[in-house]
Image (cartoon, rainbow, N blue to C red; front, side, top):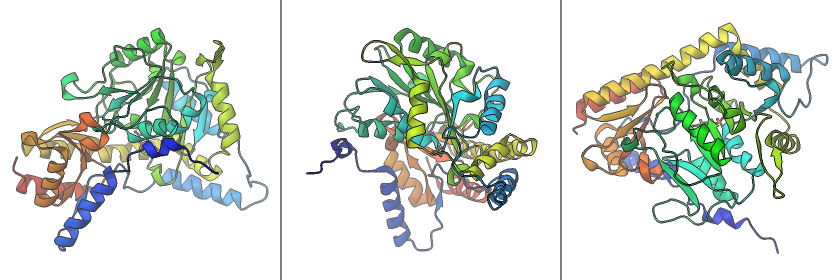
Length: 411
Ligand SMILES: *Cc1c(COP(=O)(O)O)cnc(C)c1O
């Protein structure tokens, strides 16, 4: 008799986005002429940069000629792309990352989930609260947690609150944890980690032989020059950190798919017999066995991100979303709301007024302004009383949404 991976039964039904859709649909049906503006979803809206499109069109033409046709590429990604990344994203910032330590993939979502395959099942795992739900659900699937509790937290995971009380930095746990997920600039709060914050994490990880999973999906949004873009800007990080990066949010590749994971060759963890094993070897084995690479065409598109033209176009794209974030912050503040984030990140984290719950604020904003955001409680128990507004939208929609809030919303 075939049996299933019972861990999947522990997963809470994907509650957040279906529930948002349900409430929006019900409202739209009852109010047929309401023009609803969605500032809820973490997906980009603006077109792909010209430099990336030109490179992909050219690569497509190459695929149509037998002399330049490409079949399977290296499972780790083409060396010309990995070398550009090593140079521009890491070495230019003083980080010691070699092209060999970079693995190209079709997304950070899959990499942050798949990475668990090379780790044991007896690790203590810490996540921030609120959190990018992928980190939690992939641990549930892998059998690294117990059941869900009433408040939505899972038995067996260590939750590190990110709240106003700790100035939106995740506090270092008092206990010993083995794997730690950090995402800065943060989704959903838009918070950042300073060099000192990250140094404290690296020191903790070194003292406890822990591994940090550092998700830098939003590094392109950092405007404050004192904030590190990579964990490898921190001394000692090569001995305790894996970094995830993506072309999704800087170059608009959410639908094109290209990302990368850095596993330093100096990084080790313990085998059952007590020996130290290089994680690079395990991840290389994993990728070589289960993955056949990102398409040649898409990797050429990603390479164009590092051309002079590409760099300028990406800067324009990021600046466009950051200007949206600025408009959102200013208008919400003027409307009497307390806002966080949105300076070095495309997300604005709003404190709900008058102790409203995240969902009550959602309903109020939908009913009075026909604007949709994301309830903070959907990202974790500590997100209750907060609300995420995304800057990923057209200028016209952002301005119209903020105009409605300014005119109609009463705190
Ligand atoms: C958008 C996002 C990513 C990128 O995921 P891809 O699979 O590369 O598109 C990674 N981490 C976080 C927290 C994100 O919000």
